[in-house]
Amino acid sequence: MPLLVMKFGGTSVADLDRIANAAEKVKREVMRGYDVIVIVSAMSGKTNELVGWVETTSHLYDAREYDAVVASGENVTAGLMALRLQEMDVPARSWQGWQVPINTTSAHSAARFVSIPRANIDAKFAEGFKVAVVAGFQGVSEEGRITTLGRGGSDTTAVAFAAAFGAERCDIYTDVDGIYTTDPRITEKARKLDKIAFEEMLELASLGAKVLQTRSVELAMRYKVRLRVLSSFEDTDDNSGTLVCDEEDIMESKAVSGIAYSRDEAKLTLVTVEDRPGIAAAIFGPLADAGINVDMIVQNISEKDYEGRTVAVTDMTFSCPINQVARAKKAMEDARSKGSINYDDLVVDTDVAKVSAVGIGMRSQSGVAARMFAALAAENVNIKVIATSEIKVSVLIDRKYMELAVQALHDAFGLEKA
Ligand code: ADP
Ligand code: ASP
Ligand code: MG
Image (cartoon, rainbow, N blue to C red):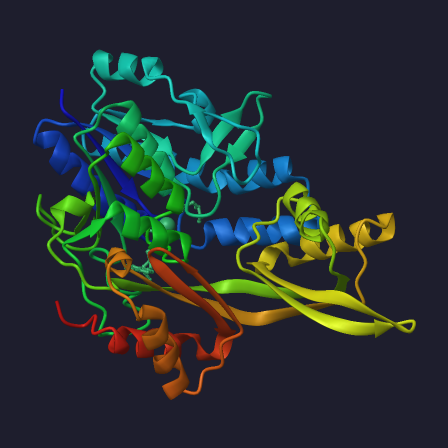
């Protein structure tokens, strides 16, 4: 039997009516002759609520219990979706991660797949089941504990199942009708793309475009999964939505093809750190050990009079996700009390956002960074930190200017027009 993976995100299963609507889409594919693996998210808002409960109960929580709690949202929708399908005479059953089993590492809240054995689900298809409804976002570690894959992880579950079961395609049903030049909620000038290259989508996702989890794009690229994003609210057919594909399959080659943003950033500065070999390792080693995802780094060397001598010192600035600030501060304070680093002050700025321009065209076109800075200057937006790579330019700015910056850059790079 040909097989499809269909993933429904939080807003697409937000209530019983929407679950019924999604089930109709699944039934249509079954009627066309497909076996279907359906991956479901928790009802929208549910995961946030569960995370809130954990954080209120325990500030520096046990990550294993965090996963046990937050994975539960998907269990509810998986069961409800299976029931709905049964009511529509589609033979279906639900699967929690451990029942498949979806084997993962034990990196709680950021687990990675180890293996997804097909035998159990294949046996059910062989018995006549047409649909396997799998709870997204979760797995089970070697220690037998429930794990989760990080926020937005159901996308990655979907792509992993498409790869493991050799699906004809992996369809990601969501609340927008495809991938846009930027978040359509930030500017109505955002334009829907018919196709986007894996590498561009990978960069956009990792820079904050949450329409796909970064890891899902990575897996699709590695295992050559046909990955498509489309609306669960509209009538759709084989040509709907946006296809994520290889670079060769794309005609457009603008310098910039998309603008991404991330609201959840924080900037930390260690003021007056001794400038000596090994200091970066002494700072970023403990941050890595504490599981902090350090993103941008800036080091400013200066000289300072210290007890009559001139010494070289540095201010070390880095950014990380806002919800990791407490852990980052603790890692730095611990390192200072152990004597492995020294600093005068640790300044935290949690009112920042990152805005990025992305495009594979940057490889061959110069001046993108300069155009970006000029567009931000014209709007009087001050840049705090800059980072570049082969196909992106990112800036850290005050959060209150984030939407303005996205709109200005979308205009500056002419993304409205194809
Ligand atoms: P789901 O719950 O279905 O997983 P998400 O909220 O995770 O949905 O992702 C879909 C959202 O991603 C859209 O509602 C949109 O606001 C946002 N988004 C951000 N950047 C983009 C983009 N470039 N194209 C489309 N959507 C985007
Ligand atoms: N429910 C999880 C989240 O909100 C996983 C997902 O929806 O992809 O992050
Ligand atoms: Mg999502």
